Length: 279
Image (cartoon, rainbow, N blue to C red; front, side):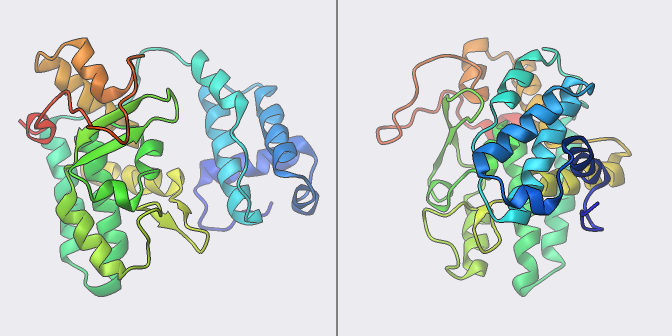
């Protein structure tokens, strides 16, 4: 076992399972090329007896750990895409109400108000991520891939990793972004990820977000809240508000409509999204 003590248990378990099933030590893994390592991770868990969701979780956890441990970038996993198609179509995620989302945001806002100086950086970062989850309905992976340049604009452009669809949404966090960047004091360039992590400036790990969202959900509501619960909230809220499937898909990115030209005019299909979600 070679995980650090602060590694969340499910992810620590995933890495240790990988070592056991693969029969490889960390020194063995260091000798593998990124492509070979990616294929080894895929094969170990794809052929295991775990559920589809567990396979996806374990592959993601091991990839994040090894990329950080070995200072490499792994190629995209082909198996994750296959597994995602096998998942049940209905959502079993916890439902969030508007009042609970407001409570969630207030909780993280209070954390920002209680600290100063560089201590505000992680507090503001977490508030920004929660607001983006709650007011855009995007998957956390796509939020973590936002660049500084994108976040300064009045319209956020998301190119979804899962579908390749481009989605344009009114930026609900410009004041917080400007405050966040001011505290960072030019440590990030326009082309860097807004939530860059470490010396390599890779996107922040999903595991970090999962941890602080889950922790807040247990504290506030004694429930298992994950980042994806906010996506379910946004889509459900828009359905109950009477929006058509086509207009909702322009936010969720589920449609196969033509992509928005990134360099042209960005079209926002549902205007004033933030206000509508909080009614």
